[in-house]
Each structure stands twice: as structure tokens, then as C-alpha cells.
Image 1 (tube, rainbow, N blue to C red):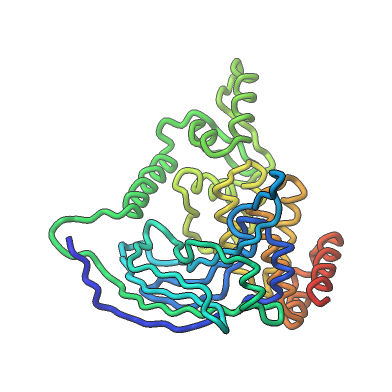
Image 2 (image 1 turned 90 degrees about the vertical axis):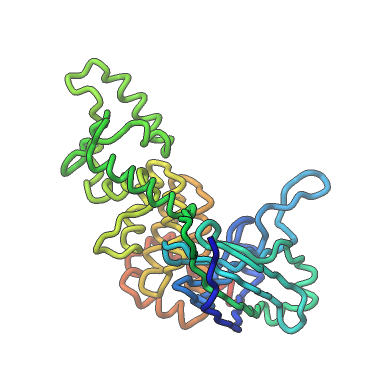
Length: 356
């Protein structure tokens, strides 16, 4: 099998991250801020991903953890087609005004991995000394992309294709109900599901099902669990994700679905869905939905701490308060009026922190 690289495109662009000192204070190690879309090639959208405190906390000499003294840059694919596509990149990332960082990737398959970039962290001593201007960092990106397709008689099956086939099989099992051993009674209907799938993805479902089914083993309706406070629409989306690893394609927007599903994912402790919804909402922030997303993240964090939710809240606050125009536009949105007093106070406190 060969790969035909015939579509060559070159991109030169830059992006700026502002209020760096505030980002370092607010962003925990392992959390990131994404730039707007830098370029699109072959249907793939790319952003620059910035970890102000790196991927992990640093350790002091006495063995205690603390804020990392290193940052991390990555070029990240935000979205792209499902079909097999190979991209050949030569990418350099440099901080202006001096060139003190460089990263190159000569070959990359964006079906299996979404991120590449600097393999080494940037030291904050170096950043402050050479690149930090008015509490902002500007990065330049130069990319040469060659979109390729597989050719030849031998059939190439990519990891993403295998995942699609597996997801289709599990979707069929969910829809057919073959082998289902648990009935979920919901507020407006019921669903036939498989206990093994639920307990594999959710500690809450595992504990609940094992306790409930043991206590009702002699019931006239064995295997029936009552979840009267959950509707069929949201439960269908949750089950679809548990079985297939992705959200269903519906007429409603992904943002609307994630806003509805995130509280349910947090309630039943489904880490993969929490991460999926948080990432989707983070990359879809706008002046129209930022207040709603901030309220959702705050409310769920009040129930239990989760790094993905904490990262979503921090990124949303950063988006709202990144400049006066954005903050004013968010305050004029309809969702802003629905914010709780606690969230509103925290948002204004964060704004004045940035302003100072």
C-alpha cells in the first residue's frame, strides 16, 4: 500500500495568549487553553494548545508538589473527517520576538493521535526573560501539510475504522436489546440494557446495581431498576455513549446535548463522558453560551471535584473575562440572567483580578 501526497498546502499564522499571570494562577497542571482555529486542511481544524503549568505538578526538594515551573505547547487537531487520511507536516513554533522554541513533525496520522508539538517543556525563566510582553505570549506557527490517501490493492484498515466497526456492533446490541438483563424504569418510559456495560463505565451504576439487585433478588420483577428522575431522551444519549463511545447524531446541536448530558455524566460518574462534554463545550464557548456553561460547571463542582470540570470552569472564566468587550457581551446574554449569586460574584471577582 502506498500513500499519494498530492495536495500540498502551506500555512503561516500566529496567535496570542493574554493575561498569562492569571492563567498560571488559575490553570492547574494538566489543564490547557486552546487558541482559535489556526488553519484547516483536508477538513481537519488545528489549534495551538497551551498548558501554562505543564502536564504535571513539579516536586520541591522536600518532596512536596507545587506549581510547575515549565509550560507546554502542542499543535492539536480539534476536529476532522472520519475517513482515513494521512498528513505530512513540517511545523515550527517560535515565540516572538526571539526564536527560543522549535518543534517539528515530519509524519503524522491524525486518525490515531490528535496532538503533537513540543516534546520538551518551556521554562518560565526563559519565557519571562525573552518572550513575555505586557503579560502576553505570541506564538508563530509555520506548517506545510500534505493530505494523503491510501492507494494499492491491499486494504488498509486504520484504528479509527476498527473503532467505527466496533461502535456499530455495540449500537446494534443496544437497539436490539439482545441479552439485556436489566430494565431501567424512567420518568417517561423504560429501556432494556446490559448490566456489564453499565458497571464497566460507571462506579455509581456498579454500586447501585449490585446493591439494588441483591436487595430485590426475590422481587416479582427481577432486574428492574427505577430511575424516576431521568427522562428517556437524556438516558438514550447517555446509553448511546456508554455502548459506542460517541454521542448520537441528532437534530439538536452538540453544545445543547453536552449541556444536558454533563450533569447526568457527573451524577453517574462517567469520566469519559465528562471529559468528552467538557472538551466539546470548552471548544464551543461563545458570548451566547458562556454563562450557561459556567453555571453548569460550577454546579457540578459543588457536588464533586473533577479535573475536567475544573478545567472547563477555568477556561470559561478566562473566555468571559479575557477583555472588556467579551465580558460586556456575556452580561447582555439571556443566560447571564440565570446565573446564581455565587457564580456571578466569582465571575466579577475574576474580572477584577484580571483587570488589576
